[in-house]
Image (cartoon, rainbow, N blue to C red; front, side, top):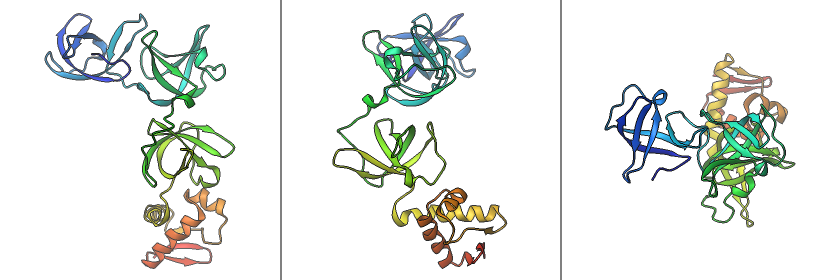
Amino acid sequence: MLDLGVKNTLRILRGTGVGMFLGDDEGNDVLLPKKYIPDDVIVGDDIEVFIYRDSEDRIIATTLEPKIQLNEFAYLQVKAVTQVGAFLDWGLEKDLFVPFREQNKKMEVDKWYAVYLYLDEDTDRLVASCKVNRFFEKENIDLTISQEVDILVFEETDLGMNAVINNRYKGLIYENEIFQRIKIGTRTKAYVKNIRDDKRIDLSLQKQGYANVEPNAERILEKLKANNGFLDVTDKSDANYVMYQLEMSKKTFKKAVGALYRQRIIRIEDDGIYLV
């Protein structure tokens, strides 16, 4: 079976003037147009391709890398808006369709939006939706406290920044715990801070407790080396200045500096910290 919206590993069956036909174990085949054929493949090879529908609604294969796959979230730019909906740049020749019913508000050309990609069962077409909240898993939370996760920041709120966790869950990073530069569309690592009784998930951009000291001590050392062995930051510095200089909380900074000082890697003076 050819799976729309994801990468398929298929066998090259035969070549033609317009491309190569690829097949699966069930006798299904699909065209890989000539312009997408790698130079080093021959009939009989297996090849990984993305399957979707082209502008004429035919199922087709491509070796281009999509910016989003089925059942994933992404932050994409609008290329066009028509009478039927909006079209997003997702890295493929045919743009990704967002019907008006899947828009929170009318989308605008050149602006970026967080979307989810799903298969419309009525039309068997890949469709994107801006109404991302309805696609999160809200009950079966297969996460543990302190677990490292991949996140996509997709929304700013009064409390902080909402993020997609592992393409499955929704989590919150509280504003007063953001000590590095992030914005909507940022993809980064984070850590599960808490899973509340109502199944809501709190995130941290930094490891909790002492586990956070070592990587941040390394960051301070890198900054010191890049700045001729000196940083004008001390435990008396303003918390916002610490965050601006080092992208960490003042509390974390003090722990990391303490660890470096105990190892005699730095010395602490009134005007800042120095490499020994």
